[in-house]
Image 1 (cartoon, rainbow, N blue to C red):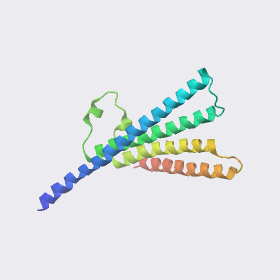
Image 2 (cartoon, helix red, strand yellow):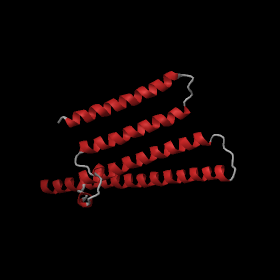
Image 3 (tube, rainbow, N blue to C red):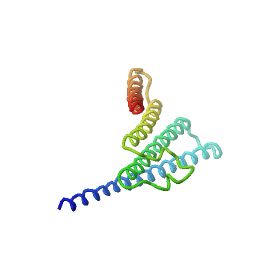
Image 4 (cartoon, one colour):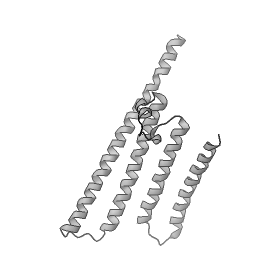
Length: 170
């Protein structure tokens, strides 16, 4: 009875595949939507530059779209790292990644702390991009708001820094 339960318990780790497939689907969706958004931006640029369409706020629109695309691409990368990490930690090593010469070490996850560290760094980048995206739309009539936002990002950065420092001294 105990052996049967242990087999069932061990095989229950395959439920992680739901998170892996869902993350991959979200990653693909974000990459495609962001790429489509950039194609639309290029079309707008071509219309304005070559066909005389008028858009006085195109620069602000373009910067906003580009920052949003970078934000979405970074989130897609988070989903990719998460999917690969969960698969490697709970299901099996990805042998092809270890055999390839040019394989990125960023995508090879060896422990839960390793996964947390890599995700934390990309999430910090997302927060920094979100900060700059919000700066575009902030009215500077109250500088205290931008100071609060900057202080929040600084706190996240310090938390990430101290987390990384504690991980290197183990």
